[in-house]
Length: 66
Image (cartoon, rainbow, N blue to C red):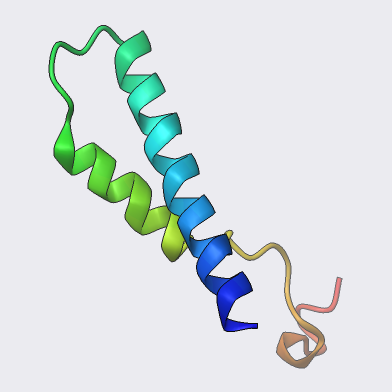
């Protein structure tokens, strides 16, 4: 199982690098923006959780149950 996790991790990194370099190239960058590349890799390895929509059942009460 460890090998599959490493393969998935490496694939996520490779995909993030490829996508970010492509984005920068399409934007006409003359040099690689290393900070943007690092951010893309960081987000690929630890994605930002989507904003929560609505309320969970334990957050509901008589005044907000609609």
